[in-house]
Length: 171
Image (cartoon, rainbow, N blue to C red):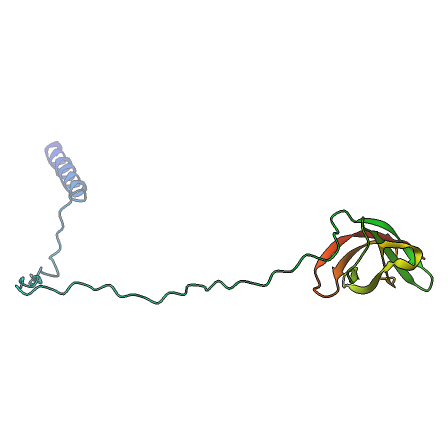
């Protein structure tokens, strides 16, 4: 009986080792489903003795800008390079005045654009007060209790000749 038992154990061991090693194999037991087919490759055309035409250079139209001279503004009649703000402040009737002093007598005609959006002030020299070098600009008060930008412009060309900030106090 021991003999049969030994044979049985030997059989179990061999069969278990056979089953465990069968799972580790890399062999595929399934049949292939497709067969490889050979297809002909495309061959390049045979060289010919006729030369191929070379590409020709075609001139493309270009958008070259034409430079036209723009009219330049003539310098103002008066030299504002040494001008300075002489005085400013509220005037009676909700008007506001700005006075610019130049070193020489004023010969041109000027306006002032004050604040943003700009309000037009009329400017003229104070000849009647024996001060032809002072340009006096007056207009309605544009704002109160704030700094306001003013620009003195030449009346005929609109060219800015002098600019600065002034404080408009409460009236």
